[in-house]
Image (cartoon, rainbow, N blue to C red; front, side, top):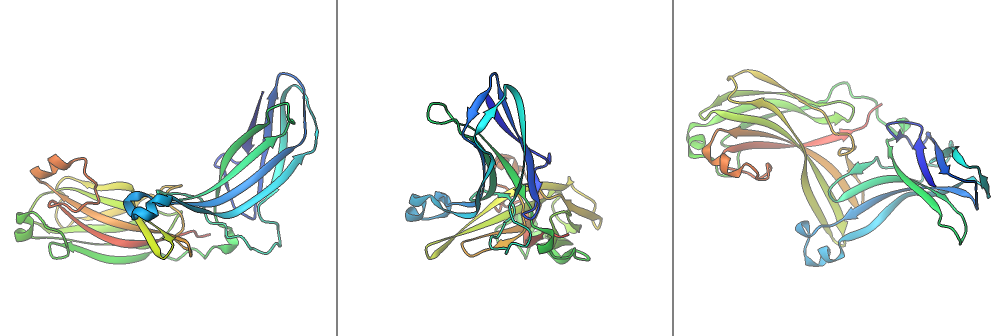
Amino acid sequence: MSIELKLSRNNRVYRPSEPLQGKIIVKSPSSISHYGIRINVNGSVNLQVRGGSAGVIESFYGVVKPISIVNKNFEIKPSGKIASGTTEIPFSLNLRKPGEENLERFYETFHGADINIQYLLTVDLSRGYLYKSLSATTEFIVQSDKGDLPERPISPEMVIFYITQDTQRHPLLPELKSGGFRVTGRVATQCSLSDAISGELTVEASAVPICSIDIHLLRVESILLGERIITETSLIQTTQIADGDISRNMTLPIYVILPRLLACPTILAGPFSIEFKVTIVISFQSEMSKFHSKSDPRTPRLWLAMETLPLELVRTK
């Protein structure tokens, strides 16, 4: 005997004003009586402060009280019987009724290191005190309503950058410091989630051969805890745009596809915020790098040069 939730869309992506549709599938070897079939829709922002980013007192509490976005119950079927075999029960739910005042702020689904914005659908088939209830839970993905979205920008907001030995705040290899290098380019610092981060980069000069050029996408999660703001920066993904010592004065394209669930529109809320950054990392050829192959790529090293820029992500029509 089992129960299953199947949503109408394979990608499970819905907007708050759209009906949440699907079917409940009950499989039973014999007919069963029940006291009702209900569905609960729950959306919340779960905040967690880890010991590495907080003090002793803050890490003692660990998990901050979740922020509720939506919590609604729907009766799908009143008390009755379900025949043996496989039974499919369709449902259609409204997260936000048409014409209803938008009291809830439906943040987009996001899975981060310290902040999780999650929407769950739970079905419960009650069978009374003598029998165990049947239940199943599935996650659905929420995207912003089209009516709440800005018009698509004509072009991404591009920022010009340059990376030299003088722009680095950490120690460099002696040959890099004396011989010098210069990398210039431009990259989008405001980008639609449906587009890729775009730009271009040119290595104008370098006294030391280049090993690799990578683009790091970082998330910056901040949580308000008492009178303090706890901030954690973590790496989402790395995209290599050059391998080996590339030709000088050759323009390289920057094209980074954003991950679906690990990125969301930039959020600046009261109790928390989710922001993003993009880092251009130049790795120079060095024997020392072979001994630190598993080190954190965000950590400044003698053979690395980097430039970090803020990145605003938006959802457009």
